[in-house]
Length: 376
Ligand SMILES: Cc1ncc(COP(=O)(O)O)c(C=O)c1O
Image (cartoon, rainbow, N blue to C red; front, side, top):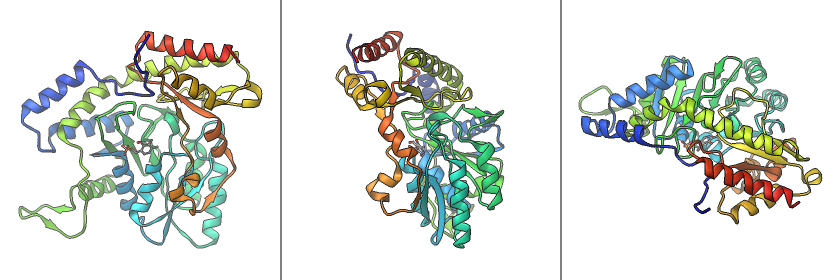
């Protein structure tokens, strides 16, 4: 058996090829075009919102959504400490200050009780909070039943970082639809990819129009290119949108494959002491990445031991995100912590989860893990 097994590689094939070729042959190359419009409509429909703007990345989406909500110098934006750095960086791009809050150890998602405590503290201090940005971690929606009322209590808008969660849902609502705006990523490792890309989705037509304007160099509708403010070159190209449309057709199949893989991991670990799957009771998850959490005392081994064993057999894994308050770049930032994110960083491991994994690769991964656990 040979060949590297990746964590979450792009799953593209003949359908993507035919969509891309058709877009190229249509002449709509430079750079916007009908595929972008159609991709926006398709994704908005899937998420169940009225508006969308396709962008070059999810990071660009977070940046623009925050700008549209007025985030800027002197303001605070609340961000989970357990996330990919893009969530925090987007806040800094606006000039606002990111303040970090810890997570629920069962899911890795923003802890609503700590969020309430933090917003109350900031309120007492008279700080202006431009937004809260919950992250749907590894494809499991955050606890919006509790988060949204807390944010409403303090009058703070929510930007949902659903970069990892297209196709997920909770309580009958789709990921991306919970806040004033939702942000998706189509980066190469995500559940669907445009190679690189992102989208803002929202029922707020004005907000999306504002983001579209800012993403297009803030160009006024004049033939001579009139600009009244500084904008960005953040739009997605027509060719990449064509790939995204093909991927969207296959989304449910891809979720299904990732879910079946998660079930296999769950079965493998069910009889092993000290190992659980993160957010394993979330029936609405898109199962983007399956993460095991290992209690070394009960299991007799560490997540890092399994990572090392798999790396030695050419199987990629990844630790859970290193919390933002541990990152040198954000070491001085304010944070309200419980220790949960630190614990998940120490004990969590993301396992190969790609929808394009061949049956032989799945079998090899499971056998390799099984052999490791058996030997302990
Ligand atoms: C939670 C989270 N937020 C934001 C991003 C940024 O998305 P992009 O890579 O498309 O800029 C990512 C992934 O890359 C992510 O995982």
